[in-house]
Image (cartoon, rainbow, N blue to C red):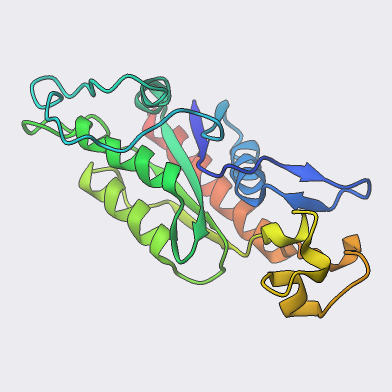
Length: 219
């Protein structure tokens, strides 16, 4: 089983024409999962109660985090999976808070020379910019510190700014819509940025590679 995790608080929403209004991270993570040719599970961290590492060190004896929240259920799926696709948005030039908190807690899985995620294949997805970014760097660093494999693939995509769907974007001088299009009477669907076709093409390539890696590891 391949596990997909989206750290975004925004779930997929489309308009009547099928255009993506929000949820780029979820959309791309699921697209990769769906094209691997393998069984998969998907988890959204949206709405989950996940705090950052408390530095209590109670995990040092047995590699089990003692903080009680929703992190453990996702951890168990991660440990049981054959590979992980992890997606997160870029907020203010960094990974978003719940994505950071979730990955920070992986500290509990790497004590006393026992690394619970050793050799786990993975794919990194970031939404918010199509350039290398600090969110991607942080995910890489956390995966590397747990001795997971180098990413099978990295997918970067521009996101859909919240200003397009907040309800006030057409005349808000502080927002992305006015900055890009000027003041509007209303935000037409055709103005909302969409994930380019070439991003999905790259996602498909990555998904095929990931499926092949997973099948190869079973031999």
